[in-house]
Length: 294
Image (cartoon, rainbow, N blue to C red; front, side, top):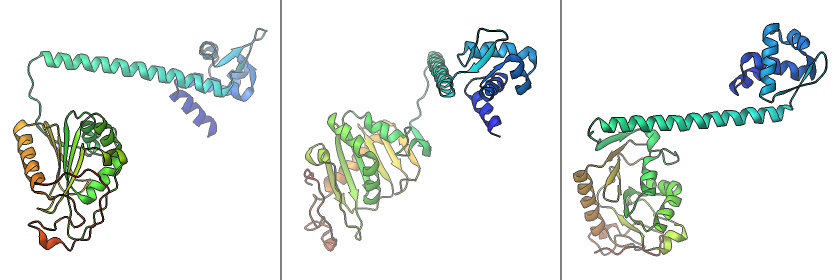
């Protein structure tokens, strides 16, 4: 079983099946003649000499100068490192070649004429998982130039904060302005502790609201892209749009909600039209810069 597994792995690292059988035979014998290797490996004699020559060329075995010549293995740790390095180099070559070919195909397709860019796309989960490198939302925030706007429920905001706070900090350092509108329910006790960089900047603003349930999560990027997470949970599907009219409508909706939302206080809705909600128990949010409402 160990021998079969060793041969399988060596084949995956780039040896032929015959080379792998001969190499493991040499490992077992420490030092051996071609006749000995043929006897142990059960490889046809005519194939033994050619494969031993190939292994020697690859730096995996050494051949002594004597008659009959004897073969001994290169230390296995060195041999594995050598095979792994060659495999990585081959993978990089294939990657570079694939990228080049795909770019050429893209250019050919572009040259065939103008193509309509989709303006509404229901993104797969693989592109909306915050911990994935393929997360389109995180990449959009990282590439933002001007502003990012969130309309989000408190529980989901806390999850996004855990995943995205470093991305927010990098964006703020690049001058991107954040406006985050958080929906809270009567029973919720908001407590948000932000990184000091976000606490001290005027570019990161938070407001509370209870006007209307958060049927979806809205994220706007530079007034050019809109992400709608359809539902109030992070596992819900996401609709992405770059349609200028749809994005503008979403931005206008956000601005209205933002302007009518009260400034933060220990009881967010005291002395507002929602005064009946002053029984909400709220711990002070640890954010120095909170935008005042109009």
